[in-house]
Length: 135
Image 1 (spheres, rainbow, N blue to C red):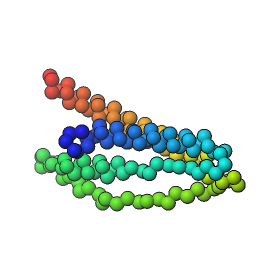
Image 2: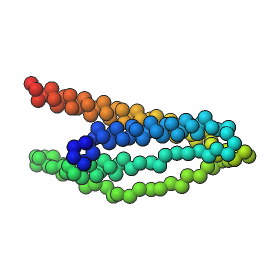
Image 3: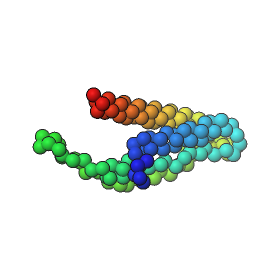
Image 4: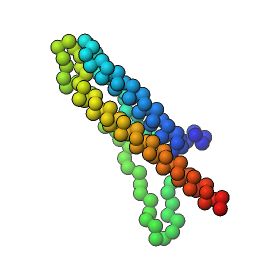
């Protein structure tokens, strides 16, 4: 990080760490699907979009040529909390629904893949900028 401002690399790193930890929790839920009394757990969603907006507000966009579109204002800063209750509980008190956990795991995997792609694109952009500056 530069100073106390998060860079894109730091934000992607935080996101990937979060998704890795969430993967562990979701696989524990699936592994305990037959454990009496076990209740499914999930990580509280970290607000990475808010962190990105905060980082972007420190670097305002500028209209450098008259033909360029003016910068857009940032959206509102609100978050929606979801109440998470198991919609199905077995007779032994187990609150793990395999289908729900598999959907969450699939979404988590997809989010991780997006984060790695963003990381690769950002590195490619930096390599391009560095090679153009050297020539």
